Length: 317
Image (cartoon, rainbow, N blue to C red; front, top):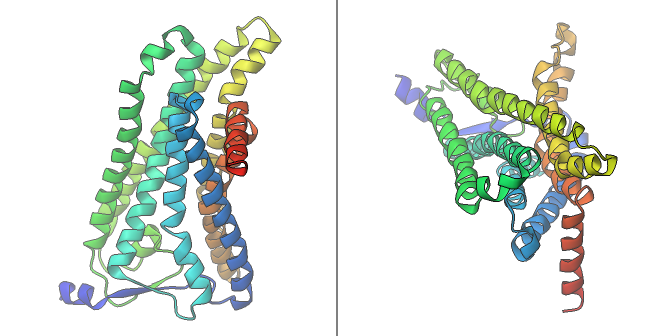
């Protein structure tokens, strides 16, 4: 009976902003503009890290991976969101929903690990500069980046495999813009305790551990910087990790704001809270990927020089 019920659900309906049609066109233009900035900004960063030999270092290799990851992450969901703003009935197939969940979940987990790898790179560069070429050789930093992608993909495969095996008994309306995994799990007509436990363990591994690792790295980094005798030396040392630290604060700060903010107990405000939660989640998915290339280009003179060189070459080619 469970198998037949599950097979009956061939598609999901995405509510999105269906209850607020006047907002859909405005948000379509806004999200499309942000998505184009993401593609352009991160695409340029990837190009300069590949084409400029001065940027063939571990830090910029990780930055190129981060930019590619941001493009993949937003592309896994933003086109679906944009289509939903223009389509009266917003639907997605069961298999399409599973694929979208897999990609977005994998990219999110990978970014958590990758930010931790970047923190280790900055730790070695500042705390052990003489050993940096040996510790962060190509034979080390390339496998580090690959392991980030593999870990994120493996975690997503486990979570989505557990989710799609659940029976769905007819209720196929997802109160979200995309197939957000928690929203999908609420539609299952079976015990989801295993899924909840599995996701809890994954959150500890992919959120908690990287945060502790990054925090510990920056404790040593800051302690080392404070021991530098000259103010100019301290400023130069801090500038090499300030962009990464800014990205980390925005990335994890937004997550903390999303999940740690108190829930309203007023039933009359439930609709407003649902709308607020959905919009926060939507902008979280595009804001951080849009800001990353801006932060790294504005706070890094090497990237700015590489971008100017690339633009001038294209203009005078």
